[in-house]
Image 1 (cartoon, rainbow, N blue to C red):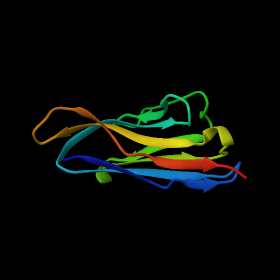
Image 2: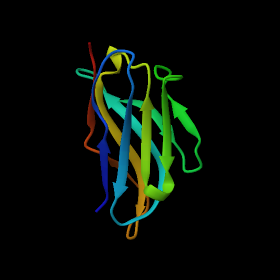
Image 3: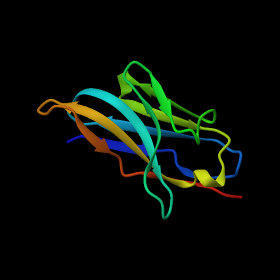
Image 4: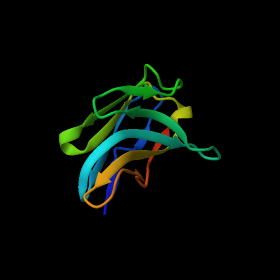
Length: 120
């Protein structure tokens, strides 16, 4: 079984920073694109950022210049450094990855999410 486990969420004041981590575990043969999505209360889940195996990144316009996605392929882990956080960044943040296991081709997996609350 493959699992994605996020960590690093919490309460932060406006203008503050947080770093999210997501570690993939299980019978992993390979990992493709990894990314972060978020869902604010009453809204649909939206893309935050993605990163390919060789480090090419893509960001939502709303987070460009404030958030940085990175990955450590040796640790099967993706990170999201979030700076200059604003109340509108408040959401549950979900990790996403395309993972190939020992018995299956690439499938899309989601973590359970970590809550980020930006408030004074």
